[in-house]
Amino acid sequence: MVSGLTGAKLVTFGTLMFEAAKSLKWVKDRDEMRKMPVGRQKKLQKIAATRIAGMKGKAILVDTHLFIRTQEGFWPGLPFEVVRAMKPTHLVLVIATPEEIAKRRSADPTRARDEVTVEGLREELDIARSFLTAASTLTGAPMLIVRNEQGKAEEVSKSLVRMLEQAKE
Image 1 (spheres, rainbow, N blue to C red):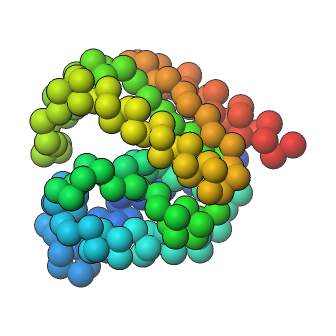
Image 2: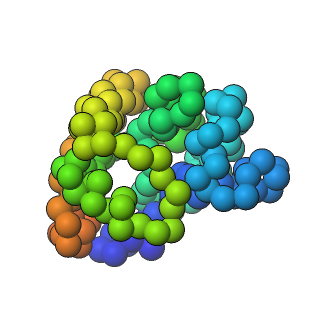
Image 3: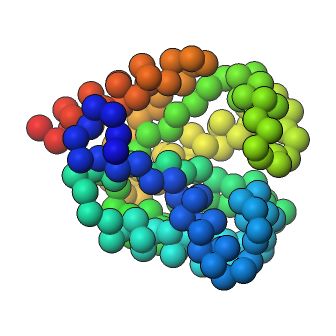
């Protein structure tokens, strides 16, 4: 349930992919997924997208990455067949400064992340904006970029809820 948006569910795309990967015995931990061949990752994306498309609820909010840095290069987190299956009504990119992202990642002991410089994170933010634009173009869904400053997650959440409430009017 999403605070302030009656009947809404929050679904993490990567969690659905990870559950499928574990059941197929392809990985033991979540961070192994991005190191798998892209072909396997595509299969997991399709499984997750199909599950999301079948979910019932007033609003399904999908938390996902617009791209994944793989050994084969930057790979879309929402390729055409995935974004088409999910049929989004809105696309939102939540961003922070590269410096904030670096600080948050270094403070997260639960993940085994690849090292990325602040300049690399700046490049990733540019790539994310490009993928957001492409997904919006493919689906016709409006896009929004929201800044998530440290300690202001509740404010960001409330502004998104207001936007979604207005959209359904």
